Amino acid sequence: MVASIDTIEWDETTIAIPAFFTLITIPLTYSIANGLSFGLISYAALQLVTRRARRQDWMLYLVAILFLLRFFFLTKS
View 1: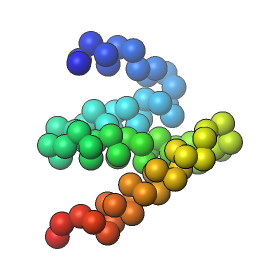
View 2: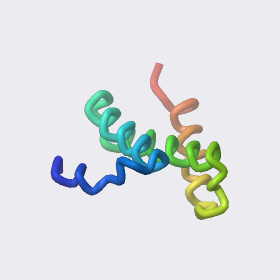
View 3: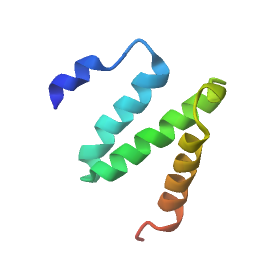
View 4: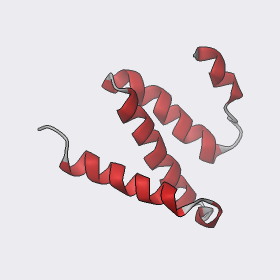
């Protein structure tokens, strides 16, 4: 699994930052699902901030919004 880290495009910040967040969040939360969802949310947010949103499919943003709603409303207190 660690060998696949070499294939990440670390020069492209819109890819490297979500990948880094995913790699860090998985062990910190003890959940692959939380890590992947956090990475997807950060990827969608970076695409919107860098104005590359038109290049992505609308489904990406729908899933990111659903994950955000999951984090805000369905997390245990």
